[in-house]
Image (cartoon, rainbow, N blue to C red; front, top):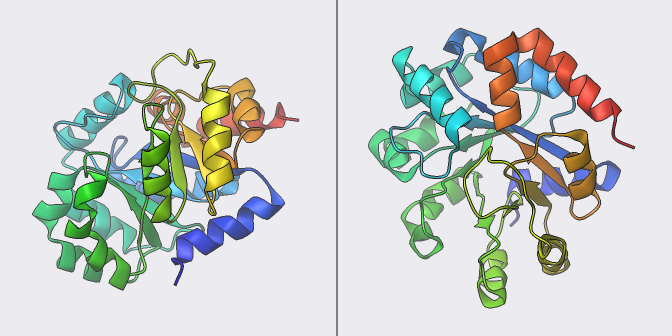
Length: 257
């Protein structure tokens, strides 16, 4: 049986290209989390990644790393994030993005119970190897939470096929060999890589890492089902706050044909 997030995004992609933004929970104070989520939903987010601050975020670039450090200094913890998410209903599904240690320290069974009355419908755990997914997947399956797989440019065709066999929520197609937020010098083979994934996948495929302009969004919307935008939004929230970030997103998407 397909997860709720998988079906939701499959239905959404029929009508329009998907947009999934990322924010670091607590980077500007946990009291801002609800307004940040509401703003993103009002500006077209189909789902929202909520980052969990961690001491060694191996997939994150300097902007998100700095946001995580700031969040931790402000006293943000995984438990406090979940408590905040329990206080309101997000207009769109939420996806927790964090690292293996955070999930196991929290306790998978307890986390599953605590998420029951929230809109969290997916998780992304970049440092959890596909081969070790059964350490967490049975608990997520019981809670109707999708474990989202990342597919990279270095993944062989056999590996891509293997990853797609159990893909759920959406396929996160990494567009660069590197960390989030880095300058996007997209490789020539990327177009072929994304088309190959889309041909094989029976769920939504979103491109992410380094996407920060209307040109990037338009480029990837033509190659797959939509985009994930993280560092650009995190930086805007840090520099300009919720209201101006909303205006930035309106302007960005108004330039897309």
